[in-house]
Image 1: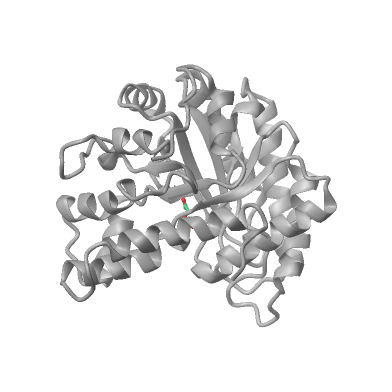
Image 2 (image 1 turned 90 degrees about the horizontal axis):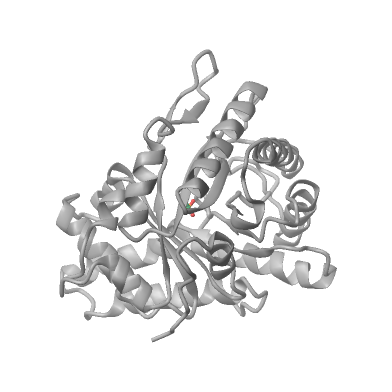
Amino acid sequence: MVTQKIPMDNDLKGIAQGLTVRGKGILASDESTGTIGKRLEKSGLENTEEVRRAYRENFYTADIGSSISGAILFKETLYQHSSDDLPFVTCLSDRGVLPGIKVDQGLVPLPGSNSETSTRGLETLESECRQYRRQGARFTKWRAALKVADGLPSEAAIQRNAEELAEYAAIAQACDLMPIVEPEILIDGDYSLQRSAEVSQRVLQACVAQLWRRPVDLEATLLKPMMVMPGADASKRASKEEVSIATLDTMRRSVPPAIPGIMFLSGGLSEEESTQYLNAINVLAKEQNNNPWALSFSFGRALQASVLKLWTEEESGRVPAGAAKEMAQALAAANAAAAKGEFQG
Ligand code: 13P
């Protein structure tokens, strides 16, 4: 078992440092009941509390501590236990994995916009954060989503989501929880690499400007953006080298060095693509030698898709017990190598 010292109670910088330790990243396993339900049902499984618990146990009791620094949980999961009755928070901490929690309550339509969204949850955030902290969570995540299309994202959506993200970060820190700020640029649509870079820059700069306006400690804040790349429907694809150049240029133009880590989401990319792009970003970052942050992952689907498939097969006896856990460990290890630019795929 990997023993990583869990930082002191109020040491939020220590939590950020622990999460961004070289060669480790974050497991985003905080899908809402509806989202995980869709994925379970697609695999032929029922979306019950027990199935969700058993599926997540597979990760939280795997040997992932040498590749995973933190796991983001959904509210329900924070209170669940393993089949031998250990709280999941303890299973994770025993493996040196910091437990975190998604604190937003999902997307809502932004009034007057062309199908844009903001994120709800600020009204009850402080009391919930205090409760989650007592339950053992050490860090939090809040997700905003921005669509790219003709005239989108609108300035109104960019500003509103940046304000909400910064407000969230200030409240989380006041409750002794380290915030991950996630302004996701959605991959859906037909847009170019160049447009992705322009939009990412506007969105990230707006977020940082709002963080500056509040009592937010940047050294105790992590950013979770999408890598800069063409939309999923764009006919002109970009090579991993082009993606890595555009991503690092955009990050250097937008993210202050005080923020210790940029933990990319996978946003619907395949497992293979996510790992390859992350690796290319780290290979280039080493060559450039002027990128001040840890560049790692906070992947959901890219750490889970094959695991869910195998776990479903395991449940029906088609593959031997333990296969899904081995896959979880292998995917975590591949991405941990990519976070050092050492993935040999
Ligand atoms: P994906 O990596 O599947 O995009 O999930 C990351 C996440 O946490 C989205 O909020």
